[in-house]
Length: 208
Image (cartoon, rainbow, N blue to C red):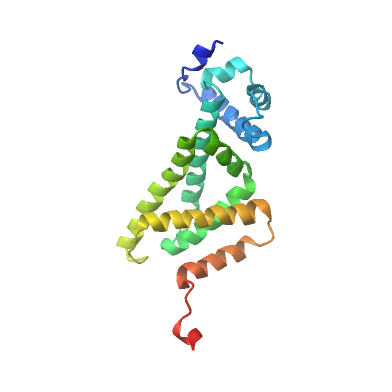
């Protein structure tokens, strides 16, 4: 296939079989980029892991950069769907934060390639890296605004609070679900729950 042909992004799969093949290629790319890194990984590594021919891959993606972009979008969708399903039974926003944090830690533990793929994306296509987090932020701000209207959390600057909360989850996942799993998720969630509900400042009795 010529480079000019590869520059034209193929259309979305029109059949269920095509959708399954595309999903298999994305999963293979996730595993390959996660283990080798974006720059070391080749198209042949991805097709080998997916069990498809290179010509088949080019029916769905124009090249490695497009695979990375679509992979980041796909991973973001899956994480958001996982978190949404995990907090659906929450009685209020604070419990949703607790359930969501646990679900995120569990997801990172089961999908360790997530962080590496995102780190690779930052230097290959910063726009898709930003899109991943900004998509989280937009949905998160809507949920926090809704919780404020219901009186579940205090009013405040939702954009700043949302990015702070995302940073908290991001680094807890990095430290305790990816690097060293030396703390139980119960302990982590309980600690952050106390932080959410009581803050850092001493109350009057503790100061005395």
